[in-house]
Length: 257
Image 1 (cartoon, rainbow, N blue to C red):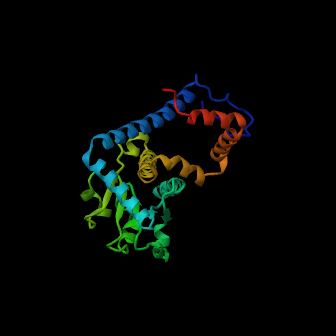
Image 2: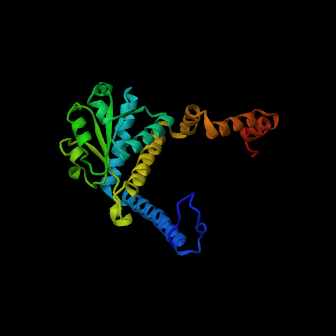
Image 3: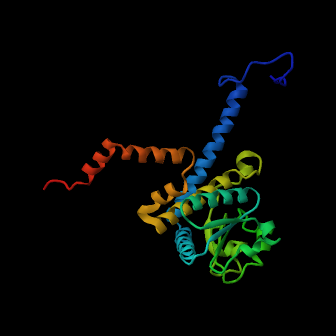
């Protein structure tokens, strides 16, 4: 039964899980989640088993760590949905104490190329690996600047962004089937989910390599706001109370022989 628009005189009952239309929408919703879960499972297996993916991750960690140690930063460059994913990855890295900034490709070609400094590295995010705006930026990036890329390709030589950069580092982020095949529309969905996950993987792995057991303290220092900051402050306040100090003191005492 076709539903009336809001404000019409005759209204059909609200959707329920028992009527065919409601059941169809729920089935569609679960299919989206199931497809994303499958894609994440597949990319997990990739980084568990594929030598190229595993080597790419280790190279990326070493590269960005060296850049940070030299006083440089990682610039992440993307456009469209990939650009939004890039901004999220930048935010995560900053909160984890990793020097990182977002470079918008259009702004880069209108002056922001000046943000690239001698000790920096650039990471491009592009599902196709050949986004025109990113290829245009790449043409102006110094040959001495390390290039990384998160794309759908599985080998660096297959990625147009890295084709002329023999030392380029690839972080594969493929999906098991095209979004149009999954959902009937090629809107970036599964691909952006996987790319976010690969970005999170890189950020947290890099933080571990750079800060080790200090990672939690670094994050706490950089994130004093919101519910996360409030939780950290409550924990500190609890430790400052007499009972908390006594418990901490007892914990630090050596165990009896």
